[in-house]
Length: 315
Image 1 (cartoon, one colour):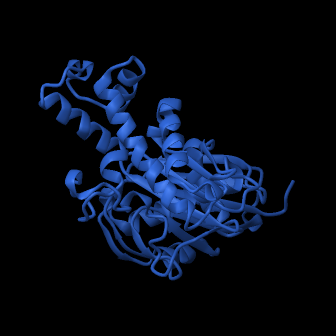
Image 2: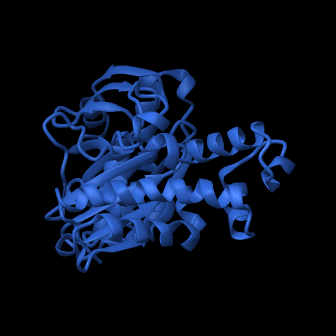
Image 3: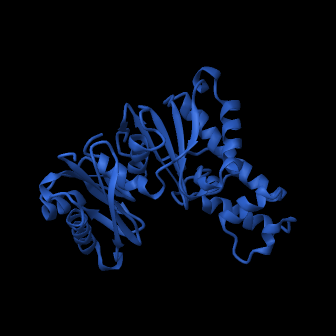
């Protein structure tokens, strides 16, 4: 049994997930409970501390063996200071999360963006294990991302590195405004939200598609229809894939990662999404930058966040 353990926290708007890992990134135990965000930041921070203590109590380890605690949080933050500037999902502003948790737990705590820690989890113990340079996309309601260079999260000068969903990549003539305020962001076409928007617009235009049979269209309906040969759905999926591939081509000549990892709910669509991404990447990337580069699915699923958060104290 390893003498030291590391705890990761994945703070969501509905649930808090806590994971206990060994020094190799193996997930040993998990614990999950409600966030109850309506009670405010101080209450939620206290609940995180409660869950962290609970997972150790439920394991065969002792509190003295906890070498570090990390937390993945959604929002904009001062990462070195451990300060949440603004979390849109929780409606938190100016919360000293690191300091609050350290006072409650008496342990070193590190925090980072939730997409960054998911990327670190995949790089440490998932689809990027053993590869020092990877880029991770998280395709869900939005498009998140994380850049891992030499095994460590690259945060940039203001902590904004890896905001892949906000690469302005859609041409002006067909761009729409993103929730961030910019025009033509990748998130507007390649997220579940973007895919559903394009599907609803096609139905509203009266295009012939089986999507019109659904009272409320979901991204899964679009992918299932595309797999069945629905032309409108295929066009939507290919458009979403095209811009992911174009964004990867841009990153390939700037960062030159060995592997691109795609996770999140949208990635479960499989090869109908991955094949056109790979084709677009190959078409728009110089041969020397594309050589040996792989585009693969994430493997840790919903555990990526807690594994990566635990790894903040090691990586």
